[in-house]
Image 1: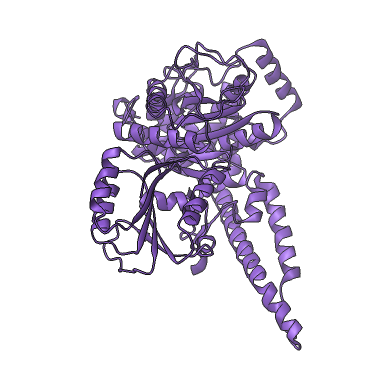
Image 2: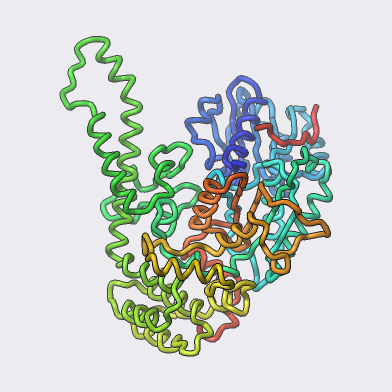
Length: 570
């Protein structure tokens, strides 16, 4: 189960099916992002696609020598744009691919508009999601719920994205959902309705053990998206922000023009692919090795090009050298900026206390450490508020809870009202009253022993001792121990065997730390294949925006073959 491969296959098939000749790729805002995650422009150029256009662009030229490949979401707006396009076609022939199920009435409208008979085919190719890593997908939706319930438009988009994912991976799953979340149950029902309605699309070859879709809610673990991260991909997202593989470096002091925005994609960057899950200390030494390797391969300043053979060798090696040069300068810049921020914001000390708040149960030590950091002028208001949020979530019902005192400390530190209000909003969003599970205290003798032994051995790395709650959930699921009273099946049938193909979806957004958990489980669990998805992929800032968008704060006091369907052919 590889989501990058699934989307890539769809794009390749579209281009192949249009045959030889020069082509234009016509997309909308969302499908532009979907394509850019799996293909670079230069890769698509090699397939005779010489032009990339948006369907909503008003001033496109007429180019009758080009074939048009249209890859669009099946929205009313896009259908209207296509109808206008077909009435006055700018290209010789049109191959139309919708990223999801298109209604018969829309296909009829397109056929009526195609008076000049320029449409070669209309098909459904289910690449209706952002493929982030092979085992991670996102829908790029921020603010999916209003209070505890779905925003109707986002529920519809999420249902489409999730059913497209199932179709692209050829899975017709059994569904389990988090009982404590009304939103999880609602999404489970909507996905089931689509599977029932479009049953012909979901008729895949039956596997011995049916696939499983598990729908969870971010509210159950508000701790994970609040923590600083120390593995490369997660850290870049936390401190710099990753948007469709792009990182904005324009605010970096003294940045050169060509590095203001860089792309980090494991598909096209070997160093990133090999290092994205390693911790920051290892990245530092690997960057050094990359630099040394680069120095060795660098053409000598006064390289003598005396013979044709010398010149030929230089020209052949130059593109690889140039590519390596770009990789080196990009990663040196990114890692340099991460180091600067870690030092400037005192993040090593901050992160150590965050980990203590997330993983230990010593209230007086935690309180003392939070108070100490709130007095530190190098700790930003953002990090100060984050520490108090973690304290508030962990010790919400502790007999010696000192939240009012910490709130006063935030005020004295000059932390803005926006961040102070977010403390109570986060408790409202993911506090004890809301959670269906216990995030902090071990529930059984085995878990208590494990935690005790962990304490005795000490921790290999104090900055990465936290495990997302998802790890425990998936561990129980794989072993067939996930409680049905907490995560019921939708419908009467249940799974007798241990699941093998698992799709987990988190309403309210997943994180790169959870993606790392899934990556490690896939590596270490024979027979288990897990894909993680979320309405978005959060860092702390976007998670706090999600909390704000839910509106809960307003109640707080302060606070390999391609699955496709031919829609109509001529």
